[in-house]
Length: 309
Image (tube, rainbow, N blue to C red; front, side, top):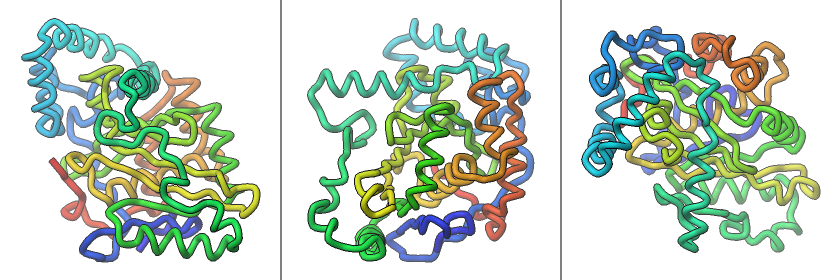
């Protein structure tokens, strides 16, 4: 069952257990170091790798970090130095879009349709749905077909009204990135969301900080405006890296896209504008406050928050 913010779109998520999903709750303020450098939160008194290990989510990425240290020690040390420099900068100064462009260029060079992390490059609606055939059906019938198809799959999906997507798309052109908060047992894990065309790529903030422009996506939301003009709907589905995220993590992030990009509340979208254009004024706690005010996750207790490692 989709949460309160999902009902307007019909955002859904399916699990093999077929258990109803409840909207994610919000936890106590993040523990020291949860946000990492550049967020205005304390990141520990150490420096370099020692300070990095103080981040409660370091364990999830330990293997990739140690692999980088072994294979390219000079690159690793350079990243650690850059990480210390980032502490002096506001969040919005990080180059959130470079990791997407880098992965796209590498995939193109290999002539592959699959990018790093197993995500499908240039995934089209035709690869999922017979577009010509459904053009004869109504928006309601297409919505039913889409929901039935994905209800048995471990993914997130939605049917977005055309006017809502227009608003999101217009805002995405002006503000292509944002910082999203995902509740965990330790506090909050922050994810950078970056639009690349009609795809919305997510990767954790610590992933960006340790791997820089080569940090792979961990979740991609695919939006399909193919039927927008004729049927008044935009179809959405997702792919995720199951080593780092589960379905209701992806649902929480997708719900926040609706919250921040499709809102009629100027104060809420104002956070997105601030992150993109006035980064020195951006306050990460304001994101958490908006989630609390929205009611996202009201039914989920801290002990039920996902902590996938």
